Every structure is written in C-alpha cells, then in structure tokens.
Image (cartoon, rainbow, N blue to C red):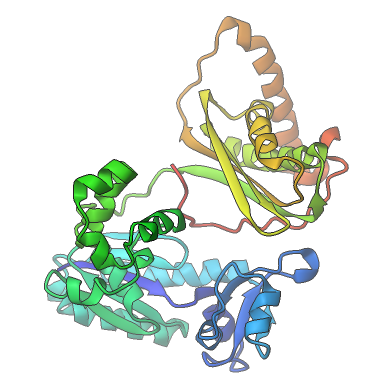
Length: 403
C-alpha cells in the first residue's frame, strides 16, 4: 500500500475562510460564486454547513439561497487559489519525489520507499493533513490505497479533515454500498444507463457480467467493472504531462437567439483559444463547441480535422457548423470552444492550400503582435463588433482536459 491521494476540502470556500482574518469560520454558511448581475450566478464552492442543506457546485445562486437563505456570498479570488495551490504542492512534494497534481486542489503521491523517512503511509497521511491545516489553515481528506483508484475513493469516503485507508481487505465493505455514481469516472450519462439496468451501487456493478458490460459500454464497460473491484494498474508519474487541450468559454451579457449572434460569440471564443494555442507553439486536430442555453441545459459536439492547425479562420470554419447544428434558434447563455489533440510537429500543406493558408497565418501573426504589445482587445474582427460578453469564466489553470 503506497499511493496517497490528498484532496483540499471545499477549496475555494476554505481559501475565503482562511483569508478572512477570523471574520468567517468553517461553520460559516459561505458560498463562493460569480456575480448574478453579470450572469455568473453559479455556485463555485460552499462551506459544509451550506452543503448539508443540499447546495452543490454548478447550482444557480438563487436556488442555493432558497435552500440556505442565511448563506453569505463572496466573489472568487482566482489569484489566491493559485497561490494556495502552489503552497499545498510544496508540502506534498516534501513527502515523496513522485507526485502528480490532479487539478488545482488535488494531488497523488507515490509513497513507496519513503516509509523510513516518515513512517507508515497512514502516519504520513496524518502528518500531511496536520501540516496543511497548520501552515495554510486549510483542511484535506487523504486516501491511502494500494493503487490510484483506492486512494482516490478513500479521500472521497470521509470529508472533511480525515484519513481513510482502503485496501483489498476492506474494499467491499467500504465501497460496495456506495451509489454507483460515486465510482471514479462514472459520469451522469453512464450512471443513468446503469440505473436503468438496475445497477444502483458499486457492489451491483461489480456483480455484473464483465462481457455484458463491455458489449453495452465498449472498453469503458470493462474499465468500470475493473474499477468496481478496486483494480487499477495506472502508473503514477511525476513527469509533467503535455498540454492536452486549450479551451475558452464565456457567459453572454444577454441571451443570443439568432445564428449571427451565436456565431459572433463563437468567433470571439475561437480567437481567444487560437491565440493561446499559438503562444504555446501548438496546433489542434480536434475541435469542440459547447452551448449552455437559457434553461441551463448543456450540449456539446466535436470534430476531427483533416490536419492540425492553429489558424483562427480554419478553426472557426470547423466550429461554426457544429454550433449551428446544436443551436436551432434556442436562447444561448454560454458559448465555449475546446481545441484538442494538440501537436507541435511541423505542418505539411499541399501546394493548393499553401497560398490561402499563408495569408491567414499572416493575419494571425499581425493581430498577435498587436495584442502582445497593447492587449487582446486592441484588435477586433468586424463580425464580433456587436458581440457583448461578460468577463471570461473558464478559470481552469490545472484542469483535467479531454484528449
């Protein structure tokens, strides 16, 4: 047993408490959220007294306040979250040479071979828990397991401020009674299909026929069955992972109804994402678009490109039909763009494509130079002039991206 998963509890809300100089405590009903006046009225995090009233991340603020009328709302402080995250990782790295950040508020560490320094894994987990509390005024839940899934499920098992050991001997007792959607990587769509099959718990999933699950869910069916049994042969590595995707999204200042308005917002987000892509020296061969409607329903679509590109117009030309196929005249609240399957390899063009491609590259190069010197909004395309957006709301500095 040598893998630890350390999870900062209610991270954004806990940072707000820690920075309040005693004004708030962990028992203060606190909600970190965007500004409802700018249509960012979504819960980002909440303290546990609010969570116990049924408030969850992603819930509209008005709904959260209906469940917990006495809750205090505070704005997010993204710069502080990064500072806290870096301080957290410095603590984690002092207990193992092999660590892997998993988002802004989580980390794995391979504790094998470190027992002579800090004692048994459970003891090290408690040392980390106590040190984070003492130095950062934050709490963590730590899972200690034989592999990554046992460690992750252990940190989720008891919160806040706890250490849970999960191994082959207690896996069934601890995990089998839990709802199947609590199993790592079982999303809402898979959980819905499993419920329809009568699979309600992790134990129910473990007792299913493996071949039948694979027939229904493909390779993910086999993976779900393995995880339900606590099996995971993923190797933890501290080598930095290559950038997997670049994304950008925004909540519109007012709902977009017509195709022209949606496409203007889409082009603006494509410009942001393509600009970031070029600064990284990468190109994308997978594009994705997401739309959130006025009723908060969400839809997305993606498409493989014949070749990787970082050219704004080429990316937008692929994204536009995807957005229009989703839109169908419905009121759109939020527009997002994702660029994936990234590569830094040299591109190859045919002689017929080269001239137009080079003109578009030159256009991007000129606008990039101006934006680097004077700021992004110094240049705008005519098609986006009528588009009004709120501040960007895709803060995901250490997000887990699609591949």
